[in-house]
Image (cartoon, rainbow, N blue to C red; front, side, top):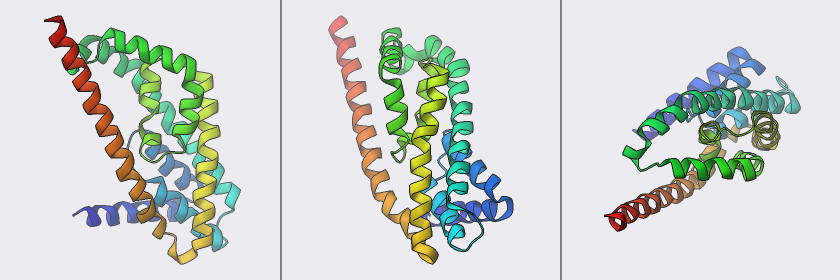
Length: 207
């Protein structure tokens, strides 16, 4: 079942980039950065393969991908700041998110947001979703844009370069990166369990 889904997603990416060129690269990366898990580990290596065939230039696909990341990230950021923030302020207590937690998130992004955005762009899974909490925490928008681009460019360039070098075997990268995806998802789940445990324990102490 999972393999069938991956095949459908891969074909969607191939068709989109083959039909739309650089615009397709940007559009696919915009989707990936708007909290929709369309894997950049397939998008950019395929674009790199097309660089090897002479259809694209390496820097062209890297810039198209990075700009797409910025566009998609702005969408997710906007959802966070206009929709997600209000939702959490109103209903957060029902999912164990307090105003104190929001204050902590605000302080974190105010203090470390630039580094968090930059390095998250170099991590599978995390890079797809980081813009939403940045918006919820009202991170400085100009810094958000700058560091999203600066973090996305080396990621897109690196994946495209690897795809170019691998040629017809560009899709082998997806399998390799999925191993990292699994590790990161496990870490996120463990953090989620710890977060819930800490809040439940806090509630018990208050009672």
